[in-house]
Amino acid sequence: MSADVPPSALARCATHPDELAGATCQRCGVFVCGACTTWVMGALYCPACAARPEVNYLEAFRLTLWGKRDSGAWLVAGCTLLVALAAVVELLEGRVLSSLELLATTAVGVCFFLGARWARIALLLVPVYWALQGVIGRGVHLAIGFGLLFLGALQLFLDTRNRLFFRVDVSERALRHLWDLRVNNPLARQAVSFGVSAFFVPLFAPIAIVCGFIALRRVDLKARPPIGRRGQAIAGIVLGLGALVLWALFGIPFVIVRG
Image (cartoon, rainbow, N blue to C red; front, side, top):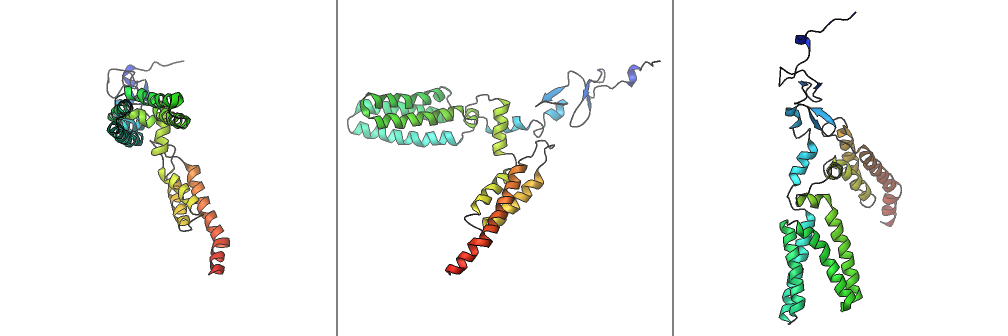
C-alpha cells in the first residue's frame, strides 16, 4: 500500500519556490534546485554560500596573488640591473656587439618584471644563448654557469606563484599545494623551525613548545578552510622538549664545568 505525496509537501528551492529542490546546501542547509546548485571543490552549495571567501578559499587565495609580483620577479629585476650596468661598461670600453647582447638581455628582464607573458619563454632562452656563447669560445666555465642559470629559470617558469603573477591559470592541485605551504596553520611550521633552532639556542625551546601547542589546538580538518599540519605541530613540541632535555643533561653541566 502506498500513499501519494501531494506536490505542496515536497521540498522547494529557497530561491525558486516553483521548482522542486534537488539537494541542500552543505553550509546553510537550504534547499536548492538544479539551477541553483553550485559545486565548489567537490562540495555542493547554494549560490550565496558558494560566493563566500571561506567556502571557495582557494579562489580567494588565488585572487590575492593574481598579477602580484613575487620574489622571483624581484630577483630577476636585481639581476637585470646588474646586466644593464655590465652593458654600459662594455659600451664604454668599445665592445659594441657585447653591449647590444647585454642590452637585449636587459630588455627581457625588464619585460619579465613588467609581467609580459612572452618574457617567461624569453627568460629560458637567455641562459641558453649565453651558454652557447661560452661553448663557442668565451669559456667553458661561462657555459656551465649559464647552464645552471637555465635550471633556475626553468624552476621559475614552472613555479605556481610566478605563474599567478603572469596571470597564467594553474591547476587546483597546484593552487592547493601553494595554499598549504603559505596559509595552512603556519604556526606549526614555525614550531618546527624553533624546535630545530633550540638544539643550538636553548631559549628557542619553550617558544617551540608554546607554538606547537597553539598550532595543535587550531587543527580542525572539518573547518572551512581546513586547518591541518597536526604532525608538524607535534614535531615542534617534541623537538622543543628534546632540546630542553639535551641542554639539561649535557649543555648546562658543560657550561658550568667550563665556567
